Image 1 (cartoon, rainbow, N blue to C red):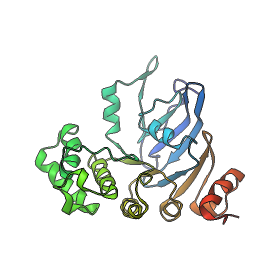
Image 2: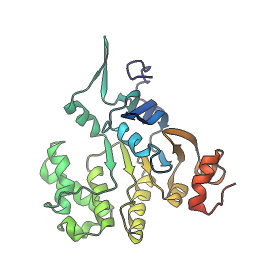
Image 3: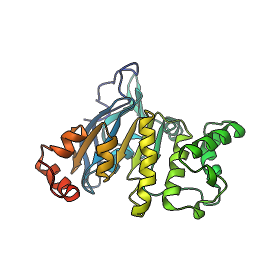
Image 4: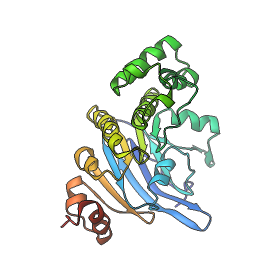
Length: 272
């Protein structure tokens, strides 16, 4: 299915999904990384994507905000078709400026923190609201200070990234994404680059966001986080969704042999 032939999604409204991905495909040369992914995420839902390396999880996440352009299918966020616009004669690509405008509503936290090393923590959080949203600097600084307090880093506002631990830098990256007031947050293995003792502080911040009702899609191998926080767990392998369900269904009673094999490495074979 190509985006040109995809049936229009229902307009956003009460009860409408926050994310509606239909038949998303992506190829890099001869390698088909995504083979027709369907995923619907409701407002306030937390969805965790599990699967082995190379299964397409991160590529799919990047397709949701058009960092990767799908070769087929479509992505709607908040009722908006991401990366394209329908016209009387078909569908056209949006301009880079138009795509950037759409991304304002989609926050993303990567494996690596990508903070500006020459700016303080507060300045890193203030940069996008001032530069992209054109917020008055005083207002943006007040909101940034509140966000840093929310992620437990109010005392680090004047520090530089090099003076922070990896876990602290990742929490700054979360605050920076939240500063854009996103309606959807994407997390691409946010703890994979951290030392084990720093993982907990980042996951605690993400748990708080989930309790606040933020819509989140999280790529992670943190099985306990998925069990405690996710509303739904989606298992991907070789570019396809093999199964989806509640944490109890997928983690404790997986249907697919491939899911059981994968989880056995993390749970010591404790799956039915």
